[in-house]
Every structure is written in C-alpha cells, then in structure tokens.
Amino acid sequence: MLDEWLAQHDGVITRAQAAMCGLSGDAVDRSVRAGAWRTIHRGVYFVVDRPFTADARIRCVVWGAGPNAVLSGEAAAFWHGVISDVPSIIEVTTPRKGRSRAEGCRLRRRDIHNKDIVERRGLRVTSLELTVLEASIGKAHIMDRALQRHTDLERLQRADARNPGRTGAPEAKRLLKVAANGARSEGERLLIREFRARKIGGWVVNYRWGGYELDFAFLAEMVAIEIDGWAFHSDHDAFHQDRIRQNDIIQSWTILRYTWVDLTERMDHVIAEIVATLDRIRCSQPR
Image (cartoon, rainbow, N blue to C red; front, side):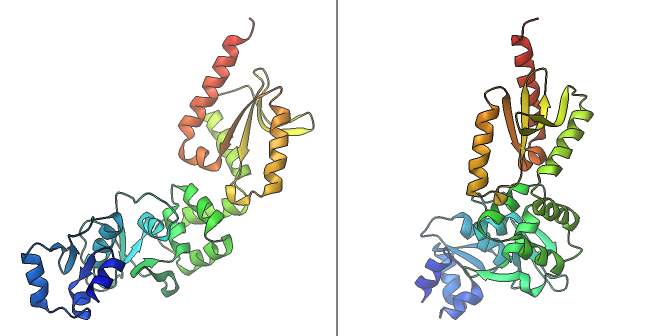
C-alpha cells in the first residue's frame, strides 16, 4: 500500500497519510533517521529513492501549508497542463480563518467558492477556470491557450462571477471582454496609442488596397501591419482565407503580423521591429 501511494504521489507523503498506509509514528521517525525519508516541511516527507521532481516540490509546498491549502495561480495552471513550465514561485491559497504554514511559497489568504476547489492527482487545486483567470493576469497567452484546448468563455465567465473581489478581478474581466471580441480591435487601439506616445507618424489605419483592408499601412514605405485576434477564434476556413489574403498583399507590401499577446507582453520588441523595418526600407529607397 505504501509503495503504491508513493508511486502515485511523486514520492511525497505526510505523517497522516503514512498512518493511513499502516505506518506508525515511530516507523516514520526511523525512516527519517535512516536517511530513507527526508523532512521537507513539518510533517511532510520525501522518499529519497527517486528524483525530486517539480510535481514533488509542488506537493510538498501545498501539503506543508496545511490540510485546507489549495494550489493556485500559475503553478495551478502547470498542474492542470495549461502551461508546460513550472513557475519559480509556487502560489498556495488558504482560508481566511484558520492556521496555515507558509514555507517555500507565496501564500494567499482568501475564501474560494467551493465549486472552484477540485482535486487533481490527489492534490487540492483551484478549478481549471479560476486558475486560467488568475494565471492570465499579465500573461494573456495563458487564457488564449486554455480557450483553444481546455475550456470556453462561458465557463470562465461563470468562475469570474463566483469569485468577485479577488486580486486581479478587474484585469480578468477586461481580458474576458477582449477575448469575447477576438482582441483584434483592442490590439489596434493599443498600437495606435503606442505610435502616438512614441511620435511615430506616417501610418494610416484600415487602409483599403486591392479589395483588402490593411490594419495599418505606412504608405511611403509600403509596410502593412496586421493585427491577429486570439488564436482560439480561428478555424480552418478563416486560416485558409487569411493565407490567400496575405499571399496577395505580400506581392506589393512588406507585412508585419502581431498578436494580442505581442502587443500586451512584448510591445517594446514590436515597436523596435517596426522601426527597424521602416528604417531599412527608407535607406534602400532612392533619394
């Protein structure tokens, strides 16, 4: 029974769980003294005959924070399989009332709606939908990826309504609104604002050319900038039509394409690339 538990839980076990597997407190202490078990947090142990993986680290942190602790934030997104890289900081949520310990994690004290606490692989974690809402703050690509593969807007909106007043709720509502609209028009507004702030001129918005509408056009340099919406809105037909459109435009224009994520998370890179492209073309034009 013990071996099966350890195999299913990444080699991590608490004192209470060890008792459920038939081990006495003295047996646990002997394993620790012998070096077979390592104490990670008070009452939380790792069996050292296997690698200490990211999953093991997360289990130790959550179980070390107390029986009512819940994995949340980006670490929860990793646990749900929405992102592939474990974050450097593990976020754990505990109820407002009651005692909890916080070692090796960022602790949030708040009450989560009971529908948004689930168990995945033997660990308490925020629901997929609440996880996506919270992990996407400042990282919109997480919500876009989740909407492509894991959930839908309606479920995200319901989770948002169940947990009002949480940290980041206003930003999450804005992201939900942007996602519902495809993000393209909001992306255009962001780029217009950035052009004006940096005093970049010579562009036209929604320029008609050859039966197509270009999101931004630098007419003198023949540079077209296209803003893509969120990937989850795309389907095969739209992708096919977009390829035809781009192949037509590229015969006469230099095309730069950016996504909502580019404009919200890498704007400096976007502007630098646009300016470099314009400068290169200007230098090659006859004087």
